[in-house]
Image 1 (cartoon, rainbow, N blue to C red):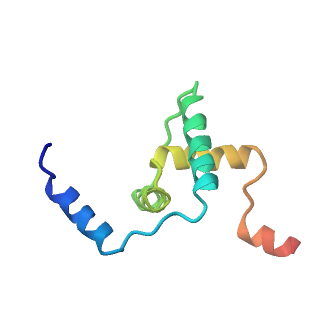
Image 2 (tube, helix red, strand yellow; image 1 turned 90 degrees about the horizontal axis):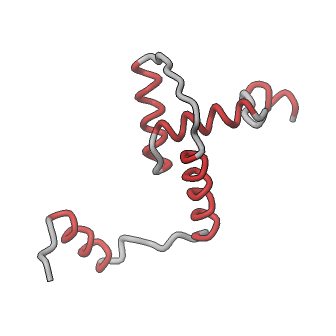
Length: 96
């Protein structure tokens, strides 16, 4: 058996200390990420856009929090907007 690297050793110790908890909605989370993967694989067009460094950093941070690539997050946002499912907060508050 091969030796564990530094990160693997730390991960094992964290698991043994009970620092890792199971995902409560594993089935729904799995389906969510399967949809992300499916959408990513269906790409058939390429678009180049220019963003401010500040916006790109914020998008990358949000993607990291979600555990998905930032390009996938951008594509998901654009898809939701195109499908009419992305609404500005100020508009959503007015309709409530």
